[in-house]
Image (cartoon, rainbow, N blue to C red; front, top):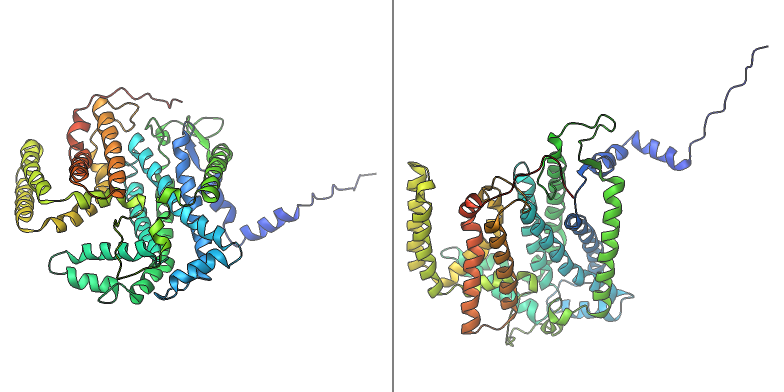
Length: 465
């Protein structure tokens, strides 16, 4: 007699059933696998690659805490400061949310600066990742705008007078400056209209731009693949016959998921220590003058931005007539130095025209305006990195002493400018800031020369540890 019994079907767990139901209507699993679960990454990425994930974590933290803060904040020049005090003293756990947000702002810049520094170390801006780098620079610009607008919202003394200083910088622009300053303020003076529009930019406009740029940054990154400390393109390697992956590639999950979780744990430990025991960080994260209500009739003795803006503020403040003379001489020297490398014809004529405009501008336009220009240029130069670096290798591991020395000088100059921006100006500090400014811009302007003239080591065919 034939056996008619059949094996009962295996019953799926309810979670798998739910996931199958969602996948039939929304590509959740394919999205996870393409963006992380089955994303192929180089197997030698070190701790420097943690800071990208930490940036995403801090962005999420800032959005969530910001939402809760807006529930009790009043964007009104008469009530803003009092509403922040109400959050700190009366709202249950309001002090915690506020300190998470304020500490998160500084943490955001720390991890982003380290993330950018990793790009300078390993050439993450080089082909084929130019667009990924440009999106990253746009994120950095948006983050600066977001931080500036958010810094005004407590409406303390430094908020008010910081806005006064920055808006006055735009007012110094020839022809359009005065009208531009009125448009930014929304009034003839810093006041309620200014605070309202800064609140709108901080809460709605800039976050939307920031999230869009982060998505574009990740899409571009996943199209080209991640860089690695050796600068080797693993996508060009032959496939492993057993796994189907490049010889030096591994899945991001679970290998880098574990690494990122460890990095997040360390970060949250340090973040919590600062938040609970030193949220002001000696006045660098939260300035003492900002615990005083804004008073248009009482100017603080020393106005300075938060620490993450101070390098650029130092550059602006160091731009005096003396520095313009040095810059004019520098333009002449640079044109003569690069003249043989400039293609004949249109490019040489364009170079001479730009140099002539700069020389005339240095003479006729006041130093304050050039300070604004240099402050903006100090950030915009990062966009040009993919085309300034002409070294035949990407990673600092295989670059020679010229690039390593230039990068070290750049980092020191950046840190010194940051420190000088927190100090009251003196003649000695101004002179030191001018030297730092020249070294800062020299890193970018001279890069086509020293990156090409530098020696380099041969790059191995396989990644190393």
